[in-house]
Image (cartoon, rainbow, N blue to C red):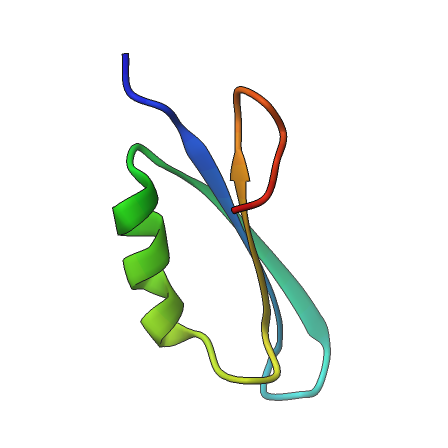
Length: 55
């Protein structure tokens, strides 16, 4: 069974408001690849669903 991860992005939108986005990834590598869309002001957490730890 593959581990599932939740990717949580917290970023500012164009109006300066905080926006949270949550979605599941099957593999950690796919979750990490999505970090290329984040910028230095964004907060990104990748959480292991099974043990609740951030990677």
